[in-house]
Amino acid sequence: MTRLSVVAAVALLAGCATQSGLAPGGGKHLVYRDNAGNVIRQFDYPDDAFCRRVEALAGRAARCQPTPAAGFQAQATLRYSPPGVLVQGHYADMARCRADTGTMSAGVELINGCTPQ
Image 1 (spheres, helix red, strand yellow):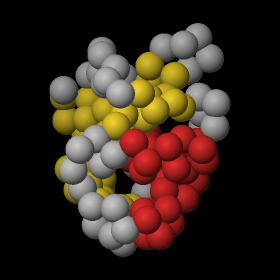
Image 2 (image 1 turned 90 degrees about the vertical axis):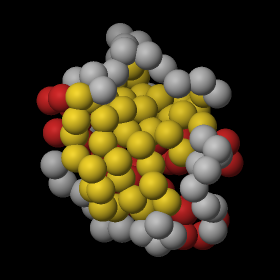
Image 3 (image 1 turned 45 degrees about the horizontal axis):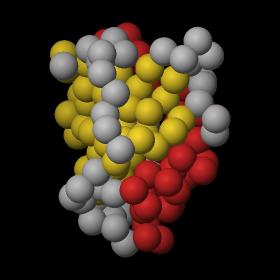
């Protein structure tokens, strides 16, 4: 999935979050995999319904799952505004984290930049 696709999915999520009125808490995990099936990123959403809305927009490379994936080396915190939902992002490595968070779309703010996980 290209960086532009990720940015587009994030922008669409911000719209979904605005319409849903969901608040932070709980959590389901949207896991992105590359063509070889390797985990490249994961976002922890407030609940299953929120995750499923994003999954529908994200395409075949992303799936919601009840447990987090393993093996991430970097993380960042994003805020979707409105409604102010914090989302923890996990990335395969620091380069992937920096590439994905280098440019944020409207309605998405980088709260805590990339750090080792």
